[in-house]
Image (cartoon, rainbow, N blue to C red; front, side, top):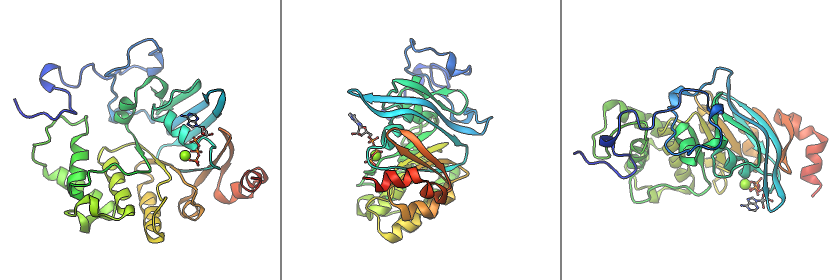
Length: 294
Ligand SMILES: Nc1ncnc2c1ncn2[C@@H]1O[C@H](COP(=O)(O)OP(=O)(O)OP(=O)(O)O)[C@@H](O)[C@H]1O
Ligand SMILES: [Mg+2]
């Protein structure tokens, strides 16, 4: 039998597509009792019929009685680039933890598209369904080249039944070339990833997420530690990704936010304090109070 890398299920032992098959019916019927393993969603099936990619309603998360999220409600439209700002401890990262299944909410509803109930899915299922998350510390393969990192990310995509040893098709090579161009690393394709600058490593990790064609990208403090020039280029990158993908960007760097801002959500004490254009939220007395009152 052909060589199958560990991260892929053994294709010989189960029917195609992956077993158990994706659930075509509404997820909201799933209930909470069933085992969640293996319930995978085909990304192409994401139901965006109402133009909403992410829907959070009254989400609450408590840590030892402290409410990190307090009835948080938020709607992200398909293709939107949403900035989320707020003081330290506002709940921004916790919100991403809930969206990605890392933290289960105590209360509330969270849907990806119309039908995927995020509170009933494992982290792996949510990633597979099309939500990519960028952590602050890039998780790239430092000893491999930039090109190989993108190649590995593409081949780790469980939607594609293939082996790591298989040769790239010209279409796949084209996708890698396109991503290299997008993340501004076309000139560094053969460079060892460990030798890249901090900002370039961040772009490479974003590129690795893009290889999996996520519908929704969550980026937590993506420009922290970047030079001004890298920050500028990251703004251009995010603007180029909006539309094809939906992006939720959490950042404290307000100069960066000002470059990419469309609609901005201000979180405070686990809830939405204000939402609107950057000018509007910055002029909101409650927002001024939260930022200056401490
Ligand atoms: N696992 C945890 N256990 C206990 N408390 C937690 C945990 N995770 C987060 N918190 C608390 O929840 C609150 C919200 O934290 P969170 O990390 O979501 O804030 P944030 O908005 O991302 O802040 P920052 O801008 O500093 O990154 C904080 O008071 C934090 O201490
Ligand atoms: Mg945070």
